[in-house]
Image (cartoon, rainbow, N blue to C red; front, side, top):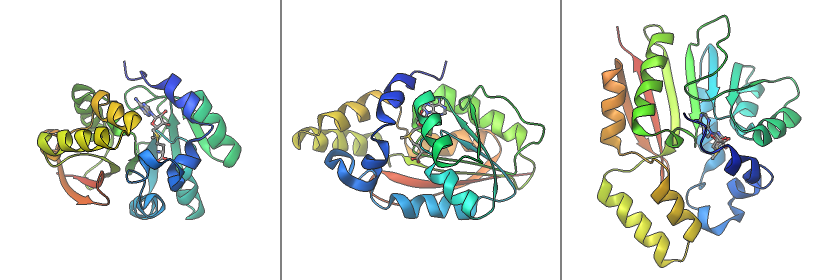
Length: 213
Ligand SMILES: C[S@@+](CC[C@H](N)C(=O)[O-])C[C@H]1O[C@@H](n2cnc3c(N)ncnc32)[C@H](O)[C@@H]1O
């Protein structure tokens, strides 16, 4: 079951684009460089692209502007409605990382921004194993999301959020499933991917995984 957050995102969909523009002080650092991060992911996506957790369609829009072919997947109805309104020609279907309507073709690249942490680590493992079966040799996963160098660094970030009385951010960091780099490295490795990690702001890292032979 990977759809625990639909209600939260149905509610957040109306103000989500204000949050990513830095107007929500608690999330300002999380979304620092948001447009550049999405642009970098968009540029790295090649061929037929699956995008998970489309949200309000900000990454989708960048890829469509680059004339890339995107199959978008999003569980929240509120988010889907906004993305479809912004991008009338886009393909955006209901689904999530683990259950979604499979189109006729397999993807060449799988992308996602600010979404993979909604899965537990066991669900992340299942999703990455499944992606490994869909992608051919050289196929790529390009994710940007909050991950931490260690559990200690994550605990420090929670303490910092609490000391600033960023209570929503602190609760988010405590209750969602933000992994460590070592966990992500292990999950990609087990599924036959070589992966690199590049830090983009204090929270978000770019993960680029390439399917090995
Ligand atoms: C923080 S938003 C990010 C939206 C967009 N990708 C962006 O970068 O702005 C997280 C998105 O992930 C979606 N989501 C939550 N759980 C998911 C799941 N299990 N599978 C796929 N998407 C999920 C939410 O509905 C929401 O649209």
